[in-house]
Image (tube, rainbow, N blue to C red; front, side, top):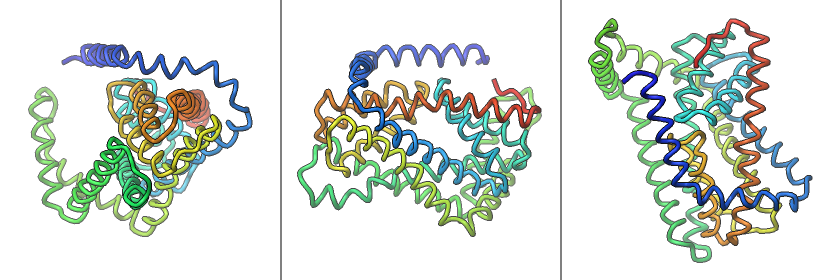
Length: 332
């Protein structure tokens, strides 16, 4: 399939998905006039919390890269975060952009950048899946919980356990990772018959895995703290949005709703989970005890800071990076 056909397919899927999610999006965005009822001072801590979340994400990447300069890592993380929110299937595009920015800045070698960004993304996502585990005592021994949120807690815990088990196997045993490398290499060589076949992918995966382990070896506690901070500061943004609209549901239930919404954001059919997060988070906040009107308004305020505000910030970060490192390669 040609690049043009793939892009057309992605755009078609995105358009169809947004069409299906249109009622939920309209419900959320219809609350826009009510944003004026929120005191402007509430947006200050929301912006600071969101900025802290982005910094924590960059710290995890800095540790995985074993880099010494924080500036290029931070600017590339902010730009890639914004880029991934405007392109369908944006996760891969954002990673490609950050790869180009980091290599142009000389922050790390190309192969190390790819493996380190992959490790950082997996590390932070595993942390996200672990968060519902810490809410289980409050859910089990607290007030009755809606079945939908209970399922979210259970699925999050199971997902974390499965991801932790798979990650442990790949981290500590060579043969499973080498088998995955051989399988990917075989598929790649069959699909790209006109290109020179690759023969060293298993060895390269093992080498890059060892590099990441070496980078995290002495600083894994700092990486874990930054990864937790990345999600908890973003979660704090949502709690602040709820407080701003005058509602205060149980934080444990809001955390379950938050984690479920973040998992929905990973669905690559729309940029940054647009539509999925708005629909899912609004409905889950209602299950957590928030009124439908307040849930829609809080979701809109949260997404204004979490989704829309990082877009101009990413453009500014890209501009500064290009001025500082003008040899950056294009990725689009």
